[in-house]
Every structure is written in C-alpha cells, then in structure tokens.
Length: 400
Image (cartoon, rainbow, N blue to C red; front, side):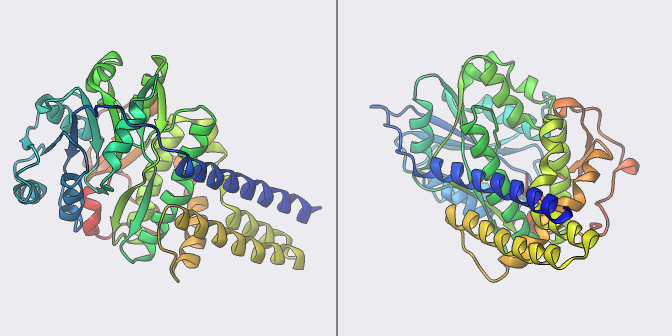
C-alpha cells in the first residue's frame, strides 16, 4: 500500500512537469503574430545596479536590435555605480542608436528597481516602453516579436519566456534548471490557463496603461512589481500574453549559497503572492518525494521507484533545457538532483519568515509582497544552513 501511494505522488509530480513542458513548447512553436504595417517607436529601459562579468555583452545585444526606431535609456541611482562606465562604453560603440545615461536617486517607493525605472521613464521619449533587466541578453528580433504581440487586439502587457545561462558552477547549473523547467513551465501553464504570471526581465506596455493602474508609484510599494503589474493590467480588462522569443538570463558563476539564497527569496515571494499555489509546490520535487518514501519504507520496490524517478527527472530536465535552446552537459544529472532536493529542503523555510534578502538589503514583505520598512542590518536573516553565504559571487551584484 505504501509503494502504491508513493508511486501515485511521483506520478502526479511527473504529470504536472510534462504539462509544463508541453505548454511551454506550444508557445515556442506557435505561429508568429503579424507585424503591424508601421512598427511604433519604443523606449527600452535598462535599470542598472552593479557590474557583473556579462554586463558589457548583455548591453551590447540591446544596441544591436533589429528594429526601425528605438532608444535605450540606462541608469542607476548611484553616480559611483561601476555599471555606468560600462553602459557609457557600450553606448559610445553605437552612436547611431539614440541613448541616454541617467543618474538619479529620486524614489517613488520602497522597491529600488522601480525607483530606478521611474527615473528612466521620466527621460524616455516614446509611448511604448519595454523593460529589460541588466542580466538579460536579447536576440536581435526580440523587439519586433514583442511589438507584434503587443499590437494584437486587447493586449495590454507582453512578457517573455527566458532561459538560464549558467557560468559553469553547480549552483549556477541548478539555478538555470530552476528557470528552464520550473519558472518557464509555470509561466507557460499559467498563460494557457488564462492566469497572469509575469517575470519582469522582459515586459512591454504603454505608458498610458501603466498610468491607468496607478503608475510606478503603485508598483514601488511591492517587491514583486512585475507580477502586480500584470495582475493590475488584467484587472483593467487587458490581456497579458507571452511572446515567442526567448531571452537569456546570464547567471554567471553562482555558488550553491547564492543559488539557495535566490531560491529562498523567490519562494517567499511566491508564497506571498499565492499561498495556496505555493503550498502545492512540494509536489513538484519527485526525487525528494521518492527519497523520503524509500527511507520510510525500506523496500526493494521503493528503492527501484527512487532510481526510476531520478532517471525520469533528469530526462525531463534535459528536455526543458533543450527545448529553450540550452546545452545539455555532463553536469546536468547532478544539478537536477541537487535542484530537486534543495527545493524540497527550502520549501518549509519559506513559511518561517517574511524577510527576503535582495541586492544587499533585507525587506519584510506582506500579502502580495507589499513592502514594509527596511529591516535593520542586525535583523537580517542569514542564508539557510547548510548553504550559509560566505562571500558574494561576482554575478550576484546585478542579479534580480
């Protein structure tokens, strides 16, 4: 009886994973929407904070977009931010692309990214704006694809699928799997089900629609400003859609400590946004479920199920990576098991507090990630054992 129950739980987990991969591939394979006769001019907003090793290359892709009329507005709050010098060098290599560098520390809320975006938007010239994070690399036809989706009737916001590009460490590979399998699959399933799921690494909308929901002043009150933006846009009767083109989230060389801290932050954010959905996430860790079952039952059948579960899980993760155009390497099987077990171990910690660490600061979040006052330095929560942070990896400086 125990083996039957264990097998049923694992089967449910795999069924959900297969559904996520199937819906993700449907988005990637669907026919592209027709471009409007005249593509509207676009302001590309690039908020900066810190200089990770891939920042120059990431910004370079932003200036090489195949689009008739666009500008790039980049900026940071601190005049000494090293990302600004990199942005100036990249912009100087492309004098034909209109661009401006903004240094402004004015605030509209507690969310530092939204404060930065508000200052960038103030200098932007065009009605149609797109937000692209600094750790994202863009395919040359990305902007055309986003604009074509936005031009469809009733669309208010366009977001993108993205894949993780790891820097070679086990932590980075595990984080990339989290993005490729869980996050991208979750965005796809939510979209197919008519629900809103937005990741702010790539977002396009009109200024006037942003104004209709209360603008960046409203979004600055929340840590998950991207998801709140999508929900508020949908509440106005506009559609939120996922574009076909995949952008790259370049992760750098994340340690296991960095990956665990990022995962815990996002877990607490998801719990704040949707407690019921987050409560079911443990079912998406089939290796952890099978391992716990084998440890309890100690039967040949349970150990056989564990071995089969690991094999199927690795295969599904390989499909998730390949489906987004990533590379399947020899580290993937280990990263697959580490990500599955790590997610299960960190899942209960999401219920133990409402403090998240982000960009070197700690924030206390309430329902829907409403931000309270910053938590004092002495009250900052450490990274979860056994992955206590010792030092920040270079790529963490600009990670969202």
